[in-house]
Every structure is written in C-alpha cells, then in structure tokens.
Length: 261
Image: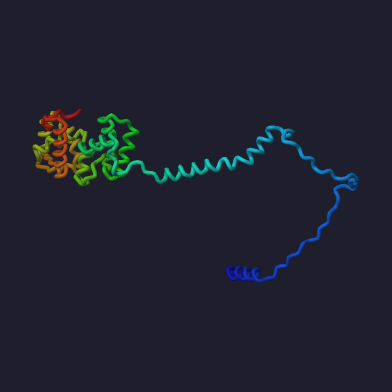
C-alpha cells in the first residue's frame, strides 16, 4: 500500500498542470528625502593610483591559473609514468651485480634466511630487502616459512616442501650434529648419540623431541632404550648440506664436529 500511494503521487505530479505566475512587487525609497542632485558617474582611476599590493593580487588572480596548467600537466604525466614504469624486467634481473650475488648465495646455500644472507654478504638491510623482493617477484626465488622463519630457495623445483621444511629447520640448528650422526649410524640410541657428540643424554632427548615433532626423525622404543632414525627427507637434506659444505671448502667429517653448547 505505501508503494502504491508513492507511485500514484508521482504520476499525479507528472500529469498535473503547473501554473507559473510572477508575484507582484513594489519599490519603496530608502528614505523619505529623495535626492535632488544628479547621480555622478564613476571616475576611472589610473593604475599608478592603485596600491602596488592590490595590483599584484589582481594580476595573480588573473594569470596564476594559466601558470599552473603546465605544472599540472607535468605532474599528471609523472603520475602516469610511475604507474606504468617497471624498472627491472626478467631479462635484466642479473644486470645488477649485488642481486646476482644474492641469487648465487641462495643457490649455493638453499634455505638461507634474511639474517644469514646479510651476515655473509656485504649488503645492508634495505638493499637486501629490495633485491629479495625483485627475485621473488620475478619467480627466480621462493620464500618458504618454517617455524616462524622465512627462508629462501631457488625456484627450480629441486626441493619438495618436506625437504624445504627440513633444510629450513636444520640449517644452523643445534640439532644438526645429531642428524649428521644419525645419517652415518641409523637407529642409534640416546646413549650412543651422547657419547659420540660428547654431550648429556638429557640434551639429546630435548633435541630429539623437537626433531620428531618437526617430522625430521622417528623414534622406536626397545625395552629401556629408544632408538632414533631420520626420515628420508631429512637424510637427503643432510646429504645436500654436506655437499654444500664440501663445495665451500669444509672437508672435515661433519659428524665429528663438537656439539654446540
């Protein structure tokens, strides 16, 4: 019903005739004493009789809009250039020596984090952040998040997600010597690991709980002993890290390195 009333009112207003008329008006003098003298015409004033500040303001009001037109055109063109301009393209990504050095470091040390790259290379934080964004944007490098830490890998399909997770968690990890020992001695007990790495059994248990929770190791209980073994992804990662360490000049056996405090 309200809609019908509204529609009817609109139709009535459209077809109803409209009467236009001008109301009568009258003019009354401001005062009862009418002027007896003749009206004086305005006298032109020369420009030299006008204050300089008034002349300046008048010229500014007249010519300023025309002066701003070229500036507005330049600003508009600059905006279009910024929106449509892409400085780095995929063909010349490695034209920058610093960016190429960062990429080579990621290829040689997969799973490196932001802090590790900045520590190993002579590059400041802002420059490294910019070049990593360019490499990720051009899909040459992928960022992988593991344990609240962002690690970078070459986008070449070399590592699966479980392997990336293992590399990210094992690189520069305190549990890395344990994993390196388990590669050479699988199904080792907690006591064997502690004797080999010259540490305590409680320390080994703490690290193995973290490795098992991360899916990098498995545990098998035999009577009073618990034996540990690496998952296939973790074992492959240890081999890749050994190869990277060998190419970097570290020839010592990794499982004989002292356990970090």
